[in-house]
Length: 267
Image (cartoon, rainbow, N blue to C red; front, top):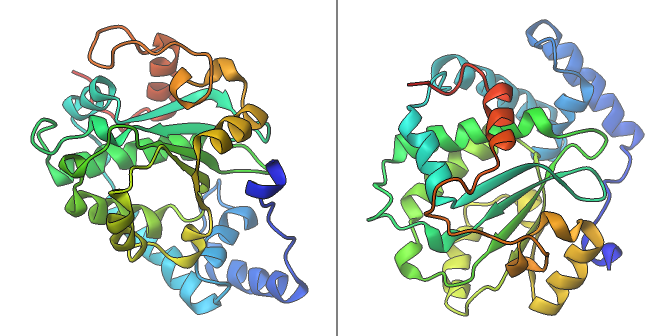
């Protein structure tokens, strides 16, 4: 089952290694202390190993960090993310390749109920991406993304927010998204998916798979410890009411804040 869905990255060719060396030489004086060749490869992959395009992308990301990156997000955004649990990051739930799990439950998002503010919500997602980059582990330094579309409807769709997020994350966090599995998709999603695909590059689209219930149960059973997954996606973990208090593991919250210290405003 793993061979059908998990596709290990092929080793770089001699030509790609030469491109990587040229890339490193071009940006060596601009690289941060935690940036190395593995980090640079992300930009080359995102730009199909085109040296000029990868360099432009890398430098644009640096400029974005200086001019736009949210050093602070209001605590209301942080707690709203916890309260509605549209997206959940599980630092300690990892697949057999040591990749952390992110679970999205889109039916919990409603533009009218969640008080949508594009800039604030984008800052919250960026904060989440910063945390994710701190918990991925080599050699498979990506995250696994499961999207559970149960009970999703057009009332939950927000193309403006989706476009804003894609345009922020794709150029500034290249190649962190690993295999992405969409489960329990309703038929109505097929029309919207054509619009979503237009926002994605080919490399990103190649990572996405729609799974039938029997396929997801088999795959997730091979990838994860069932105790780490909610029952609704094939695990044994009992899920509490998402609007109740205390359902988040205090240790997870502590780990998030520690990893992203300085990016979340405390009140």
